[in-house]
Length: 171
Image (cartoon, rainbow, N blue to C red; front, side, top):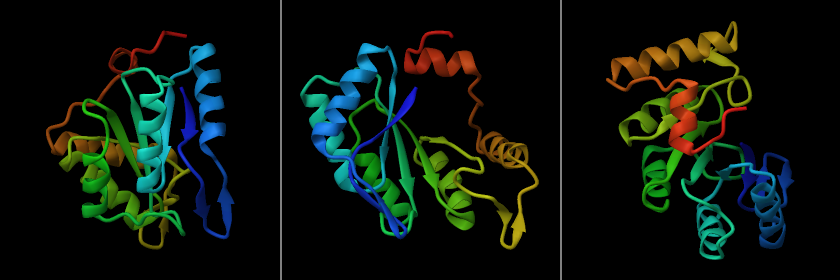
């Protein structure tokens, strides 16, 4: 798997440029090399851009989305925003949500579980365990997320489960 950013986005004081022609080129290259994309969406227009790639036959099911919320300059993490994004995904798509930053990260875990999605945690998205307290490790963040998922009655996916769900080949 590899990320396919589905549009241009402000990223704090920086920006990431991805035009439709570039996205088409990446989607074709990923398909040629047997790489399943995670369709990274920072704004709602990115979800709609992914629909264009699907309509053009450049992406294969099952689709996997990474909804990246709370990056300064893009869509903020709020439950109603996440809900709206999820309602605009193709039927049957798998998705994770990444709430960037401490509070948004923890809120996103609960939001994803409530809306039937999946969660992602780690230092790439958040370095805090709680307000003002740095996480000791990625493992600490993963353990908390696993505990929350179990408390919500959600089973934890093992690597083989994810490979089957996303139709990935074993390395």
